[in-house]
Amino acid sequence: MIKLYHGSNKHFTQINLSCCNPYKDFGQAFYLTADSNQALIVANARVDIFGGMPIVYEFDFEDRLLTDGTLRFKSFDSYTEEWANFVYKHRDETISPPFMHDYDVVYGPIANDRVGLQIRNYRLGTIDKKEFLRRLQYMKGITFQYAFCTQKAINQLARYEHQ
Image 1 (spheres, rainbow, N blue to C red):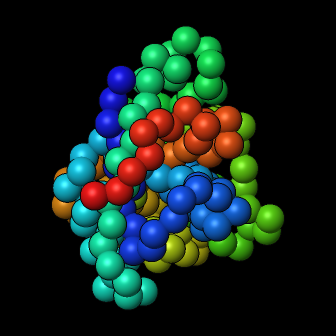
Image 2: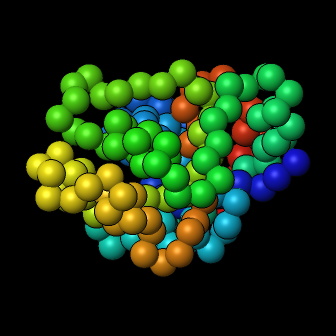
């Protein structure tokens, strides 16, 4: 069992995937972290942009579900070319409808906040794939996220509460 956290500026009682932005690192999903401080940073950033109050939601999750075949799971353990390609496909807002994968949960590094700029540079050929990968790396050091991409995965989150 692991604890996962979600930082927000809004109170909610149910997770609604249709309210999630489709152009995020791993696609339209409910994003969580195992680091409560990272969740608080996200919550405060959302408050700075949209107002409201920072809220950190806490969930219990049975992580064996990621390896026992219950959930389709994709893991990126570091910044790799495969990870960069995956992020590129999901963050490219010129693709409509947004690119979708078939995983229930995706785990991997958080991309730099300026992904859109790097995608444009890569598409225009002003940077190569190696430089694209370097520029996608999160400036504050490697930090990991979980993307719960399906209702089946979300249904596995337990003990819903907020701090």
